[in-house]
Image (tube, rainbow, N blue to C red; front, side, top):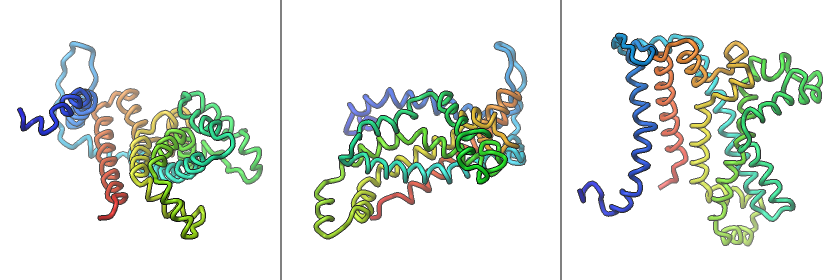
Length: 292
């Protein structure tokens, strides 16, 4: 018993409920999804038993051969390539600005946080007003606006969604950076000023290294959140349009599993998505790990 609890039995006892929560809410459903993905599975009425034969990796082969699935993974790659760097850069810059003694600081903090706590359905209406075919942005740009418009354009649909998600979640990540900035010693900024460093050099030499753990957390959260993209393409582009250019893997899981009645294929897409997120997260952890 002592070997299991280690040197901190109270800590193990306090963390046990969360371990049980993770096992019930995440580990068991994921294990069940892996099992479904390896069987010819279909939904039935309660109490009805039908044969669900083992099919090995056939479902994985089927989804990998599906051009819509491949397109969805390319789409999410485009989304992450736009969303993650934009989220990290903007949230760090804005948190640094809001950490200084600027006028109306509380107002700006609330303004950036407001979209995060507002329901997606409500803020999607704002985005449609701005980026619709007759939206405000197109009126301002005039002939320079893309044709077809942003959300129905093969090229601009996914980047537009990425910018929308960046804007909506920015307040939460600014909050994380603001907390991290409180732990950067003021003496380091004073020493940099004595050495003649300006604001930009102090930002690069003191702020960026000082919030490195927060940057790793923001990057990881942005990756995981982006990989689970569903609501925005469902509402903004009518379920992945145009021609599947804004479809995400999670949206395809919903369409294949719920709308089309193929939970085995949906489970295979989900397992592939989890594997991809774990690989990217491991690579990100290696890249942002402090030297030494």
